[in-house]
Image 1 (cartoon, rainbow, N blue to C red):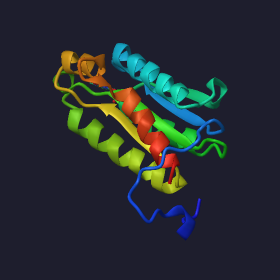
Image 2: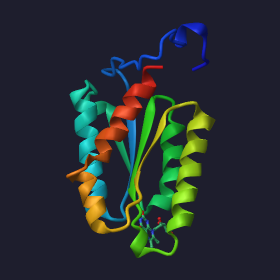
Image 3: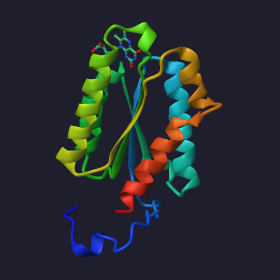
Length: 158
Ligand code: DLZ
């Protein structure tokens, strides 16, 4: 979508758009599956609550968060897909690769969004431990999968 004046608001209101005909791709990392499944369920529930049709939500699993960027690219290159949500969980205590994985996936996902000019949402938890992850995957700090879905919806309003 090329940006034109009609795509720009004169105010800074965030648009919530009609998403009943929008197609979403959700890329899910299988590492820390208990967490990422909760993120996925939260994201799908939020999309459905805001009007997305079940048949317009597509899923692609990847082995770990490092693979989210390529998974996102495979999904984003599908013309019909309007937005991509990437879900993962990298737990600091469990990996020396923490910084490498987090940096790589943040840059990778950013690049995919810019390359395809589509929202590609960073729904990756980077907690210190499992409890912090659980707290953010349906626990006391909510579900970051919901937030990722809301971000995708907001971005489709622009
Ligand atoms: C290897 C690895 C480790 C140690 N920890 C995590 C993690 O906490 N979360 C995650 O999503 N992935 C992890 N991985 C896997 C990497 O993301 C990747 O799948 C492998 O390095 C292979 O490229």
